[in-house]
Length: 136
Image 1: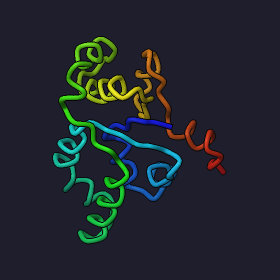
Image 2: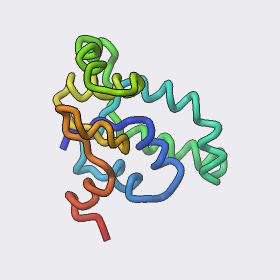
Image 3: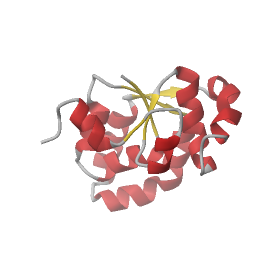
Image 4: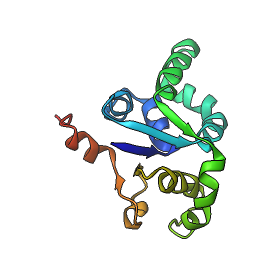
């Protein structure tokens, strides 16, 4: 299953040992994101580390482990789809993720419910856990 995740999914996995983290690490999922994800991560990384309760070292190890599962799609592959993506989103910060999904033919994994109405399938974490038989 090809999925494009947004920054909030990564942030959730960094903050709590949860189903979100388990899904990112699940090898049945091919996870992608635009390089924009790294910009958002850099912007909030100090706050995330503080909120996670992890030591600096443990947070760095977890971050590396999670990001290693995400294939970053180059901007030049996404750019041709950006205008179409802007027409599908309410928040322009979502456009890089939607453009990435359009570029690679993937579905979205986002907690942004407003993306449910786009032509791209949007999964929330609970739905993915159910689909993969991981919901207890």
